[in-house]
Amino acid sequence: MQRNLTKMLNILLPSHCLLCERTIFVDQSDPQDHLCSQCRLALPLNVHACHHCALPLPPRSLDSSKSVHSTCGACITQPLADRTFAPLLHQGAGAYLLHRLKFNRGEAEGRTLVQIMLTQIRPQIAEARPDLLLPVPLNYWSLVRRVFNQSSLLAAAISKALRIPVADKLIARRRGPAQRTLSRVQRQQLVKHSFVWRGQPKQDLRNTYIAIVDDVLTTGATAQQIVRIVRQQGAGRVDVWCATRAEAVGG
Image 1 (tube, rainbow, N blue to C red):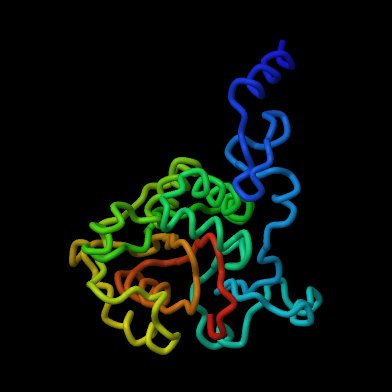
Image 2: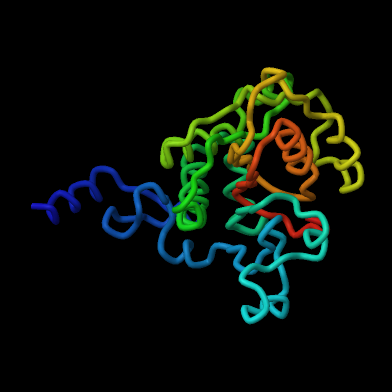
């Protein structure tokens, strides 16, 4: 009976891989995944990364005999966050999926990225889950033009899967140029005054575990400022959860 139902679904509702457009049969792929088995194996996984900023590290820096976690040079003295998850490198298929989500509102691509994120995140938060998910906000006019915030879409899907509430009204973003048009130094200068706390002045975040959700981590300037703001409000552990990580020096 189950086999016959699967055959009927494959005939009536054929699915195609988001990357190679090959037909995917129901019994060959996670329906949330939208990738064929070959493309899934070819994803640019961010395997060897800094524990605090997810910067890709050279294999020689990984020495399990010295430390359980690996840390890049910058995070030794000034860690970006308590923990950063970014399962894909921002290149090839990883960059393509994110571009489709961000500029074409690719909902299937968004679901695929969320599944990849959850595969990495779930085992690491088995003992303690965040109290809040905080998506990186867009400024008002960017949101008007784009109609949606890709970070909010990722956060909403993660929230549903992990049953963690989303707090998307605590921080606002001032208007400014698109960061993709700026250099690393310009990004860092821009974000210093780009975000403002919009929650209650005396809102108690003491000992709160917060996960900041964004689409891509490039220089880390945006995440750094938001981490700083929520720590000023008393947050305890602060993570950064992103879909992809650019290989930018300095986390």
